[in-house]
Length: 81
Image 1 (cartoon, one colour):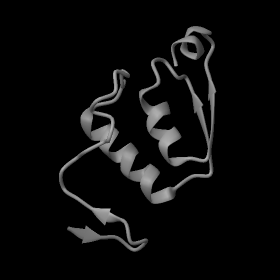
Image 2 (cartoon, helix red, strand yellow; image 1 turned 45 degrees about the vertical axis):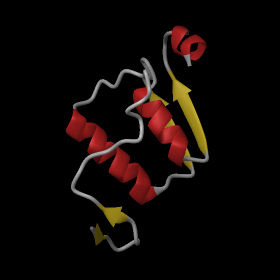
Image 3 (cartoon, helix red, strand yellow; image 1 turned 135 degrees about the vertical axis):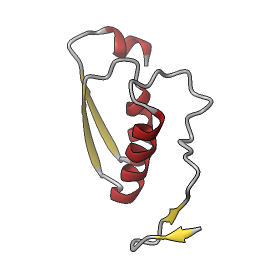
Image 4 (tube, helix red, strand yellow; image 1 turned 60 degrees about the vertical axis):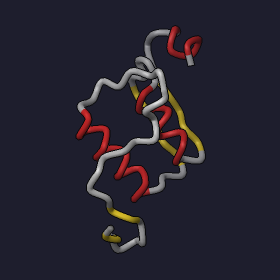
């Protein structure tokens, strides 16, 4: 295991912590890995997601950010999540 400048561990095996989630991601496995790593590295206080669909990336963002705003033209994502 290697650590980066901010002390976060860098692993070579992609894991997202959402394997048990039923949410659909519209990203490839490697896009999810990069997105998850960036979230952990940046540790955003506030996040804005535009286009929620089924909430895959929204749930990952909500685990890291203190406050998350989600905007979507459809109303059903709010009802589903």
